[in-house]
Length: 208
Image (cartoon, rainbow, N blue to C red; front, side, top):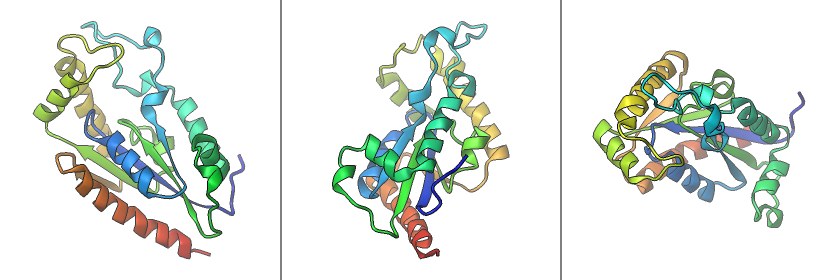
């Protein structure tokens, strides 16, 4: 597999629990970072008809098996092959902008299980994980409308137990994760992460 070798690139992982603020932070980063794209894990859920069901009748959505990870990895590799072409394909404003020779193309990979999929995690240069307390997470989840909608008892019967299981697995296999307090304002979170990524971008620019 051949990837563009003359382009400077950076892949940032924004993970976290359900309703922890992943999407909001990712979109805010994209707005501030030139020539950046987002690939969201939620775009790769399998059809509801093929998602397994546990003994309680709960659909097992909070597992890697519920996601088309091969398709997601293919999308990531498309970006790696030619980040400029990928950027132009997904961003209508890209044609109007010409990156300088030392520009760093940034891919933001966002999702609740991105660090649990080893092939994806190994490609990430920076890793951030947003976390919030149980009660806040449950309240936020109850206010959102999902398709299909959460059945009664789904949060306590599936979502939260799987979060704890997935987190334990993540912490045992993935390293270099920066944990963020999802209760902080979106402006404060953005400032911290953007400053950190900017340092990494500058380091990439200085490389030969």
